[in-house]
Image (cartoon, rainbow, N blue to C red):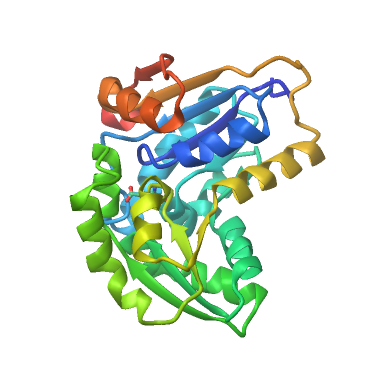
Length: 270
Ligand code: DGL
């Protein structure tokens, strides 16, 4: 039976959702969290909408079977393509990352010119344009796909010469648009925040992780579904490919030893 003491489920195609996991574990330290990274099939963002939906449904079913009380889709690509389909599929609340990111970007911009970087699928969907325009028609939004950022993050190449060159190459066109705010519309991209900030100096960087965690807290509170146990929550990590690599890069990023990570096969991969 699902209660307030059931775990929170978070998933992404890979390591990127750890940016959301980190924000959630800081804002809600008493909650048990189960994280799933579909590392065997990352990246999602270069695939068709049908494939992205199918993969996301399989991740959803895996976490629902674990008895999660709420689902956080810590992936912009899935949030853009199949959030509605996931909501139809499950009876627990489902939170995506696009709405919170859109709100944060609007709160930050002063000149009304916002850049959005994300995967090909996210940019193609115009999900950010729709979400931001729904809140304020008057802003200008400039979308740009930066697909190579995902493998760089998965590989742990988050700073240094290669990451910097890739960031320069992608972002130079956005610099000319006189944006004052840039949304990292992919949960992998905050891992490259340092190089992105160097290339986009003077521009406010929005990473939806903290906003998403705040939204999660509000929804749990309203539930009421907040944990009542009062001790530190337990964290468990599942991946669909090598747990070692995920653990090494993830532990470095989180500054926490991810000893509780294991490799799983979700049914479609069997
Ligand atoms: N981290 C995901 C996102 O926020 C997906 C990246 C990918 O798998 O392409 O879009």
